Image 1 (cartoon, rainbow, N blue to C red):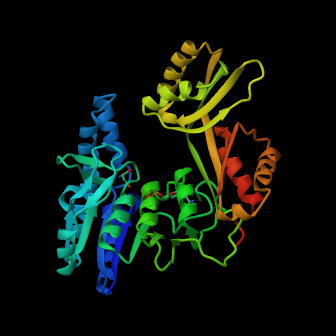
Image 2: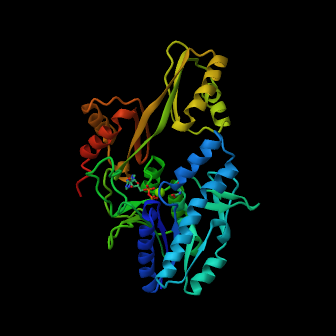
Image 3: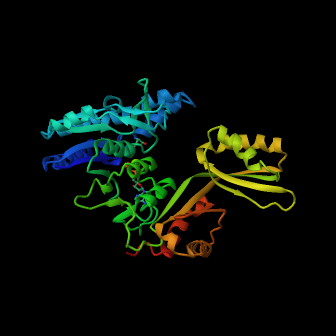
Amino acid sequence: MALIVQKYGGTSVGTVERIQNVARRVKKYHDAGNQVVVVVSAMSGETNRLIGLAGEISANPVPRELDVLVTTGEQVTIALLAMALQELGCDARSYTGAQVRILTDNAHGKARINDIDDTRVRADLNAGRVVVVAGFQGVDENGNITTLGRGGSDTTAVAMAAALKADECQIFTDVDGVYTTDPRVEPKARKLDRITFEEMLEMASLGSKVLQIRSVEFAGKYNVPLRVLSSFEEGGEGTLITFEEDGVEAAKISGIAFNRDEAKLTIRGVPDKPGVAYNILGPIGDANVEVDMIVQNISNDGTTDFTFTVNRPEFGKAEQILRRTAETLGAREVIGDDRIAKISLVGVGMRSHAGIASQMFQALSQEGINIQMISTSEIKISVVVDEKYLELGVRALHDAFGLDEE
Ligand code: ADP
Ligand code: ASP
Ligand code: MG
């Protein structure tokens, strides 16, 4: 008998019929003798709808209340799924995050899970029930409802699997696995049978929303076997997230990630002296704005230019802060651009192959795509380009690196 945690995303529970389908699938695993914990998201579109309602009342909703509001989405689906299972004669019980006691810190909207009490869940499993848990939510020490960030149901599932020492955590979604890139952008994208944790972590952090980054971190840290599968097709093996295997020669590139959610700020003509970077980025960090790529030019006239990227929703805030800094530092000007995108190549095979960067730059130049910024790590190369070239760039790179071929 195995213990499996299954997670079904928003599209997979988007209608009553789909919830009934999920129930049938869950029952099959249960009937086969497995213990099953199911984590579900809100019905597709529901979280956005709720955030929209809040926005009609307040431009800056109180984070505590926003969490109380958006967690109702998942409360609806757990109840409906438990009912659907019971209709099929499968004993089931639903729990909100607070009822399980998924204990988090108090960072509303982006809380981190500190501890999970598995007592009630285990008791139900031992009594032969399917346990249905609301994704995306927890509770802090003082009983306040919290949420784990967009896409956070993935993390609930992996954390439940870690707490229960489950045999596998299965993420059922609207694609049948992890692809070389988002199949919505490149129809020739190929499904990967396996991908390493390291690569999946990079893909997720660089914009591939198929798994929330924290779920991958969690799975790596607690050794949770993690698999991405289709909730619509039966029988596929999906994609297994694995630890790096010795002896198998890794492909040069495993995948391409991209992120439209970026903006770029440049401060020109800053007097070049010790402390420049600190003076520019200190106030940005103090305002809790995350900075991603950073480029500082070599100075030739005693001044330098400094460029960095931030998440697009924080562009306005960052620009305001930077303009104030420019005045204090006596910089020449501030230029902002919120129509950029980042494209990244990811692959552990990069470590042992030279010339990937130049091959990447060549492929982009052949399409007339200008590269605005570059950053590299051991297993990734990222470039910033004009947003309008995102799709073209992704497809050109997919071709150049032969990612559609086995
Ligand atoms: P769910 O609601 O089930 O959590 P998501 O929309 O969060 O589903 O994630 C699935 C989506 O992720 C897919 O529909 C696909 O468009 C997108 N995606 C982005 N990058 C990839 C990739 N490399 N492989 C597969 N899907 C990807
Ligand atoms: N419903 C939440 C969201 O839309 C959590 C999730 O789907 O994973 O972000
Ligand atoms: Mg998701």
